[in-house]
Image (cartoon, rainbow, N blue to C red; front, side):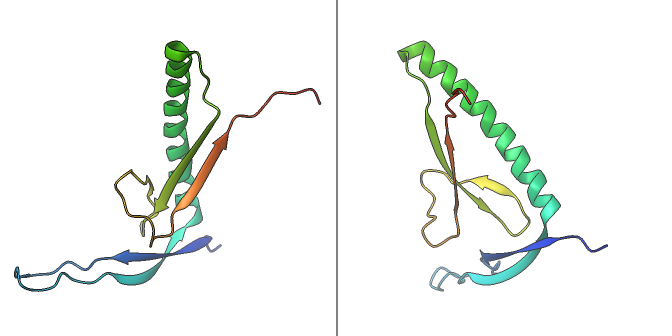
Length: 112
């Protein structure tokens, strides 16, 4: 049975062998790679597990120091050509990339 895959387009920059200071840096080359869906599931599950721990700690600290509660968090992530899921930091330029936005909102417990 063939494993399910998903295509990921990356903009990997080729490694230059001898670049001189007056030469232009190599341009990014778009390439399409296939990554197994099970690999992406594992990577995303690990990422979400780690982020969940951070959310819990942030909520405890917010409540302890200011009496506030954490209601919503929005994160941008990207997936590289190997299927690795990474948080996009403050200084990263995600504009030209295919960032995925994950929005976590507190679920209100109500009567059904």
